[in-house]
Image (cartoon, rainbow, N blue to C red; front, top):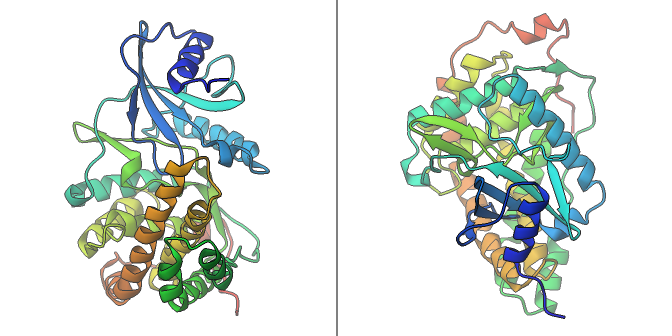
Length: 355
């Protein structure tokens, strides 16, 4: 039996959603590195349709994660955060057709900025959005043992060798650095204060649409509760160019300036938790698995191979740049009198646990 084309599936989807019939061609557009996105024009309007990765949707608990993200998305809408939310159709945001899952969005005008053209002002505005999200309902919590990363790097090297994979030499040559990076990540996580808030860990530049200088946050499936210190640290580094290997500390400080303007819990020990930047080791593991065949098709496997290369280069660059980052954080963040949310919540500043 011939496999149904994505055009046919999308045609059934928009009709099921009451959005009319497709006119013109379905256009494939960037949907991030895990899902696929299409621009669909119907006789009722223009829509962006996200086709969720089938392998991810098979994971235990994934539907609960998406339901939580949808709940937080509604909270952000109610708090006037500039987002592009999934449409609610038939009472649901997520649509299921032929056991495949989709989100439908109204088409948002604007464009995603190129990594080489991110300005200080963009960083300030992005940081301000993140701060506004973190400020909605932050709370101090009882100390919880942090989630730590436990990746079997040697096991992946051996498996890559067995399969004669294109990533074998990359893993073998960088195994010592990857072990170090994972250890630094775990130490940083253990040093984070016990604070919880609404957050979007995936709010990097590719997930902000700019329309005449106005930012709109897209791709909201990663909305969750998280640690604000960890998330602002990681995102400030991404917006300042660490992903493309062109770190600009002025942009990092601009991101923090916008963030602290909207939400300031008076924490200033960011240089002690720079190790959270090595969260990339977990993205690396996901792509190692894709490169070794845990994926939908060969196109995704090739994407996995490419991302293994890119991510290892990124980890090497982070390692080289950490001293510069720490110096800027220690010297250039605006000063504080160590009061604020800690006093408001009547909870003392937590002491970092001993590893």
